[in-house]
Image (cartoon, rainbow, N blue to C red; front, side, top):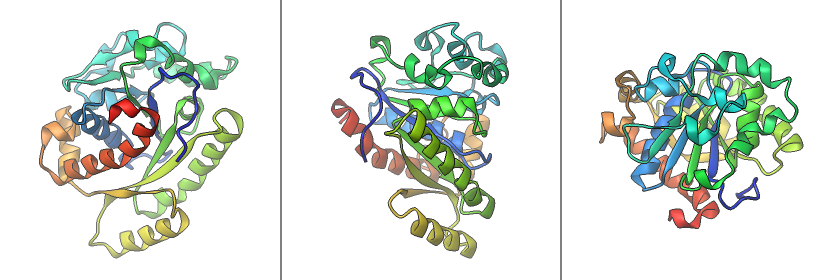
Length: 271
């Protein structure tokens, strides 16, 4: 995989989590992956671009109490670093979402070069200590998601081995190709199988289909079904803290290890 986009050595490695279908573990993956990266001593910033603010709530924060958010950054009302907050996990920070995000998508369409706003906000020495940025996209392929993909080096597309989830991949692939053509020619993607039930014949059949269609773009790690992952969201903490030795924790640690190959190509000092 090429490590791409951005000509600034100070920019962190940006991973966007994207799928326009809800319930595919996009936010769970963002949160769990961030927690696993900091276990590897990789300082990580999470950005919640979803108006539903599930990532923000998943860190035990109340979106209604967030005075600064990603919305303010995209609206030009402040710098990204000023909107970031430390979390209960050392080395893992978050730029939260709040109700202001609801108005951002329509407003962005009126601004020239709006697709580049997030990417431009990630440039600068004040963000250089972050080695990785994880962007949780909304479940809609609109202006907010375009911002995330334009800023990203890599987009991870979480998908269940279910019919509707895999059908939705066509729309996501079209958007990725559009972004490559217009704003981010070096964007690469990887598919991540989530909530995989190895006992189910349907899941095995759909997995075989994904392995055939996306042979070179399917991550080796698969995230299995684990009720502890849902519990951790309700508890407002990452799975690594909620259930340190659970199956879900082990799977996300494996995913972090797999992704470090890409991250380290961009940032050798993360090794």
